[in-house]
Figure 1 (cartoon, rainbow, N blue to C red):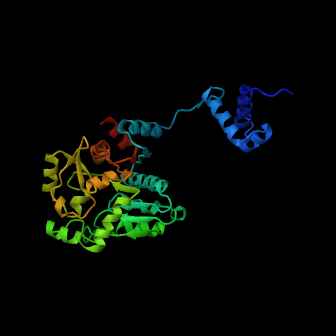
Figure 2 (figure 1 turned 60 degrees about the vertical axis):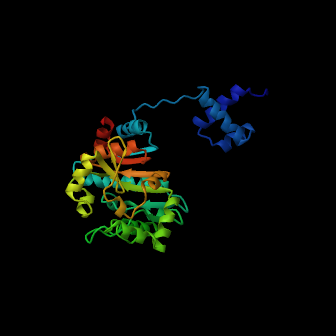
Figure 3 (figure 1 turned 180 degrees about the vertical axis):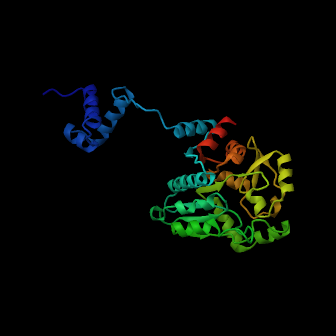
Length: 311
């Protein structure tokens, strides 16, 4: 029998793989070729149009919407949950997706940066501790003491769920004066904790907005008057107490010198920042955060995503 030509081999390999559902190894054995050669034949089959794919149904709306947002803001990924009739259920759904997105980015020996967020506190119940990689380190990015009424720190709860080591900052996120802050930053344990921030691989954050009922006001660190002043400066939202306007430009924080938190430049150096937010009050804040270039991955819901796209 005459040997098959290269073009014939491409068709045969494609038929065996896509129609007969044979594996690369089985095809290689049948054609007396290496698996690498079979892979190359299949690549050529697709590149040369020997194999063509037709999808008979449209992409789900949330996937198409996510792709448009991803392209508009040059993001690495966008994950969109359904918008439920009850806003609280929407938050739960977004947090479920956020937990899945976060777990996707965790690798063995990975360092995960976290800080307090009212949205992210709802995410923890959806984390799958059984599938967590080994040797995860939870790195706190800010002082964890917010107020006497603040819930148990999410970093500790995440560490428990993932059986991870934690590097904590058990100090107030905002202190009385710049001199107090400077003194605390000289403490060996605090200094060591901040040195670890430069090694953070993944960071998950809630995207805050400027409003009288925001988390920053509820914890007592910002008064409504301070929020109004930030608004006058053009601020529309914050990531870890770092404020920005609708175009993503940095807006000076009036209490910056009293904060025990990672610097904005350090935040921008983290290679994978996952931003999580939902709700009509967050639309402009999300838009500004994405324009800033700080966020690489967005998790939100359908209605919020559609409104962000229209900004």
